[in-house]
Length: 148
Image (cartoon, rainbow, N blue to C red; front, side, top):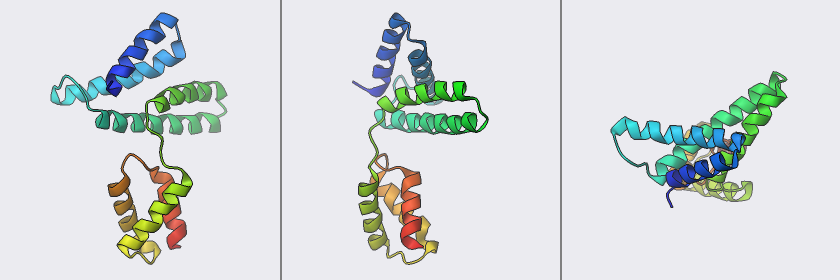
C-alpha cells in the first residue's frame, strides 16, 4: 500500500481511537501530501515524493525539539517528539554509522578526494549513490573527519 494511503488509513484509525497526538502528526503528513498534489493537479503522490516530504517534516520536528529544549519549553518539545516518532514510522531506516563509513570510504576512493576542499565532491557522489538511504548530516561529519 502506498505511503499516502497508509497515512490516510491510520488517520481514520487515530480518529476512532481518539489518539490526538498521533492524529496531529498524521494530519500534518497528509497535509504535506495534499499540498504536493495541488502543485501539479495530480490525484496521487509517489512513495519517493512522500519520503522526501516526510524527511522534510522530520527535519522540522528535530529543529523544533532543539529550539523548545533550549528555551526550556519541555512540554512543547515532548509534543514534537511524539509527532517525530509517528513520522519516523513511515520512513525507511537510514544506514547506521558503520555502513555510512563504508560508503564514505568508497566515495573517497571513487572521487580521489585528498583534502578538505573535496568534501563537496565526495558528498555529491555519496548522495547520488545512496539517496534516501543515508543521513546527510552523519555522512558530512564522517567525510570531514576522513578528509581532515
